[in-house]
Length: 576
Image (tube, rainbow, N blue to C red; front, side, top):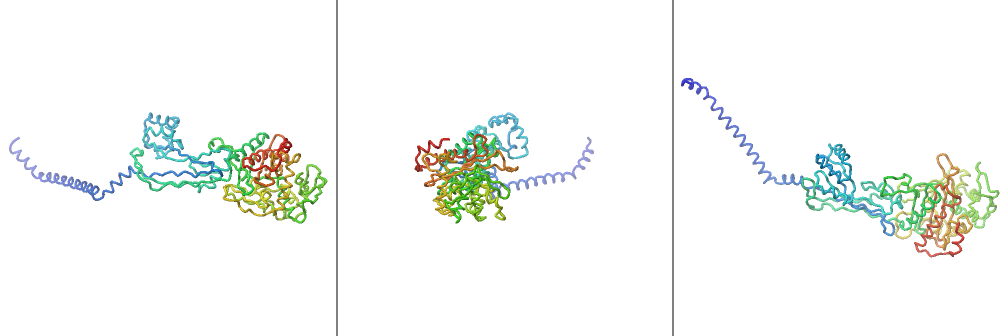
């Protein structure tokens, strides 16, 4: 290139030289400003505001964990456990953190003892979530193989699981909790708030995989739930359940109930129902077994009501133990309804009316008394109103309306029709006869001391009724199968037709026996109900009475109640 051309080119470049230098210095300034800002920020965070980075780091390593509080224990009156909480481990996962590797997922499935494909499907289904259960309430030993994998996204949580040592024997009374340890049935539900513990909190240090590194400090201590002591004696409960089950099997019955009360306190010493269920394994539960029939199911009781109606007659000026009631010809018509006895018993005393279970005798008595006499007495004995136990779904039973009470209903009440009571209500009413005329409210919880009770029958009448009822439980009498060798028993049989939506059934019955033992110094009141027996003779309490005899005999011996009658002759005569 010639010298002239190079000179021309240089002249063209010179004006741009200052512009290039300016860009350089501008970019250098921007970099220096940015660097200064970054250094300033670092200095600010490290020196002036150190807590920010500290908190951010802690947020990724420090956690506040809940400390589980175990549910209170339920025990019988002697301290034997009926419901206890045992520690378990629940495994859960964050699906977004779980390994995508099929081999890893297979290892997890094997440790969980589940099908790998099912686990894969669940993980896919919860892919957009941050939480899913893997297995709930495992024993620590069963959870260990899973935790030993130390797999990202798998976490554990300590919980408690309810266990019921008595199983089906006391299932309906004690009740159950759900998987979250909340009461669902029975006393578990009634006292859920009292039994439930208050969880605590603790601060812990965890690594990036969520595994515990160190337990730092306690924030709030866990408070266990309150313990509940029931009135039942587990020894008597087992015995009652066993004998009730035997009686139901022997008579091919649909079910039954048994209630045993302490005659001096009203405490429920045993309460058994069949069908039942195993609260520790609810995979195949008969819904009928969930109900505590002794409290929730009101039935027409039949002739077991006659001693209670008789107490109203003896309290009036119109009847004494020596009064004569003419039951001939063995039937009568009231308001177009025919009332019958098994046969014509002729002239009977009040004791004879109970001994022969005469519907005619009781009807004559009821129609002689003031219209509301028996109704008022039943009400005083707690019938037609809540027993006050606090049990969920307890039934108050029913009495006919007092307004315009027809004569037929007035008569029917005296022999146990037209009214509805639960076995618990019936047992509570009988405590008035056993306790010198004082009715005791039933209690499902152990009491401190004996309650006063409510005087509804005079002591004289209570003793007269006991004597009348003793005659029923004698050799060759209607309740002879309820006899207990060595003890005097006072009781009453009852047989009643079942009522369904179509009315009274012709071939379906309930057999009942209500009794007091020993009659000379009452300690227990027991009611047995057998539902729809299909074998043998199910009239006049011949189904329920043997169950009463076996349970009460064992209970009196277990409670160390001294015999009050000769045993040899009674034992021989009581054989069916």
